Image (cartoon, rainbow, N blue to C red):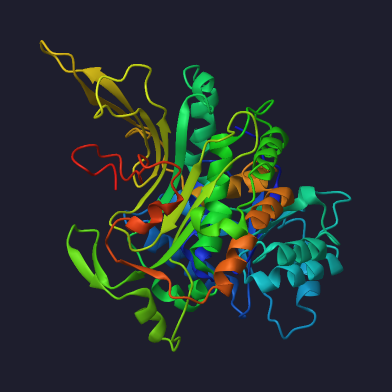
Length: 502
């Protein structure tokens, strides 16, 4: 357990949904687990003028909503004593001077300051500039860190412009670019599964691996994010950030050690070695689609009729769109370990199942008994079920020589394990000064360099986008990106029947 210095967490956007659902409950759970330092304060920053008492009453509502079975009153009392509020109305030119004066009270606020910017992306740079203007980023005597929420830019030029704006006031070591996916325990386990087990590393290369699939599918639609999503799309929303980071963890070389610097260095090297997708041959490497009206399975197992994406857009006055809700890509890595191995990355909304997983198919075995013999698979399931599964061929007992697939399946999470939300892990890392689960600017730039040409090509192509029925599996047409005819989309970890292939 790392020692955390006495510090103050300054939370911008404290009354927003992220804070109410994730951050405040997460900080409370960290306090209950004894992970917050004794001398630690939380200053919530909002636009409205709210008394400390009223804000604490609002926090109680957040906690009551999250923890239906109640919570420890002693922890609650201690947590409430940490919480303060500061009004920062955009119309007040002296708002940040008042914040500086408030934070100057060392008897209340430890002077190591961590800022969490849960605000609109357009506010990132102005807030950093104003914090700097009143001396709140100066590290002469204490550390100062700034956490910036996704997205960091909307393309490479905007990401570089944002970087140029904030590095006028911050060193790279002070900037924590969050990708909440990296806080997931199952995702962090990818690296340890690879490097803490002797059986995997010798075969983790192009000599033995046929291809790798990285999947994020949802049964949900765009919901109340219709207009935002139409300006973003699946590629920028999921692939550019979450799924490319997952790919980096799967494919990177072994870091020198588990220090943040070593892990980041290998991730950056891997991302920079992904070959650009040839824009003049785009249709063999990428595929996009939109969900049409259909029927999806909801939480209780029953079906629900849902509208198509274009119908949802029409309800907010948008008459046409080429924005993708399904995106599939084929990527290659230009290094000796992975040369020639396709990495298939896909994400989609309104699919038949919700699942986030890494599926690795190995090459054909040295001995092929018949055409029906399956190839080996290794699956690392991230959600909804955290587990590791291997599929191997085993002899069927009897007089004849024949095999069947044997599944070795183990849950990663045991009944007694801690249940940690990704934001709890990342908040703790912020206060510890551990940036290994945060993005370096080189990672951000490499990811945008890969995605920008595809985004531009798709935006320029106004022909109707392929439609797939909500609640269905991958469109058959998406197989155009596969390198060989025997490749198929791997679905859930179920094996029986045809559940494991399209």
